[in-house]
Amino acid sequence: MTSSVLRNDRHTDAPTATPRLRNWALRRPLTTFLVLAFSLAYGLMAVLYLAHRRTIPGRSVIDQLPIPIDEFAGLLMVLSLFPAALYVTWASEGRPGVGRLVRRATRWRVHFGWWLLVFLALPALTTGMALVAGDSLRHVSPVRVFLSQLVLLAINFIATNLWEETSWAGFLQTRLERRHNLLVAAVLTAVPFAFMHLPLQLFLGPVSATSLLFGLLAYFILGLLFRPMLAVFLRGTGDSVLLVALLHSVFNRTGNENGIAAALTDGNAHGLTLLIAVLLLTTATAVAIRPRLTRAHRHYLDQL
Image (tube, rainbow, N blue to C red; front, side):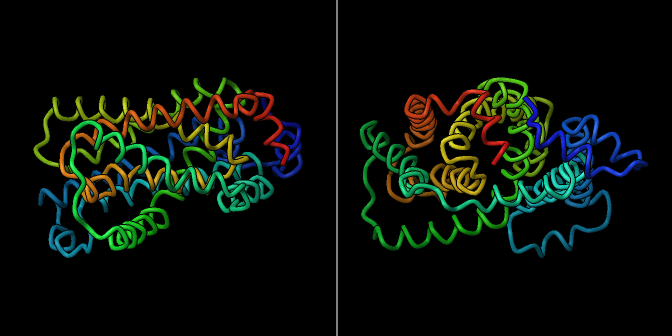
């Protein structure tokens, strides 16, 4: 459901004679966003891949990158998503719409309980269930692990996840929720989420049709589990894209090979227990805030 505020913005802020691209974005914002984002992302990552394979010049520059090439490809993805979301928001809703998106991306005044839940729930559930499943606790300094993971979390959040979730949750998921219920909107968001991450497979090892197909399937399954959790937290935190992006970073830092669960436990169970933790956290939170998951509540949030 499109709010009256957004309708008024479209009528009052758009000029009489709009450029063709802006006019298209005004009429079809979701399509315009996806076309712009995928064109930029796939184009940039194709250039990176060709340079990596020495098909075109640039391999020497890639070899000097301070981060792994797959992480750099992830940055290119973000550099495609966020400008596309920002442009389409401006084109379809004007400067007031951009202001609303920025406020949501910086909304930190949320009940302290949500901050604790975002920071602690996934690491605690994942690590605890991994220990129950047979992993053993490492003899490490909890303070050292906490500080090192906090630094990596901050880097992930600032460099990638804040801008990525401003695009996925703040732009795409939000607009889909005006047309569909929350779960359907999250599943629909998981489709472009998976395809956007697919080119990262080019930098993770030998490339084949099979590896790309399995990579796409893995990203889609991840999206089916992951995007509903973020959608539920978006509602629970009163549309705070900032906390949703932070939860994305916590998810990454919990499950990565150098992440929290791997630093605290010996064994391989934490990969599976992270997915179970996501399901448990999503279900429990959704039940607790059930009245906020309706389309009527989305309409209410759009008025803020």
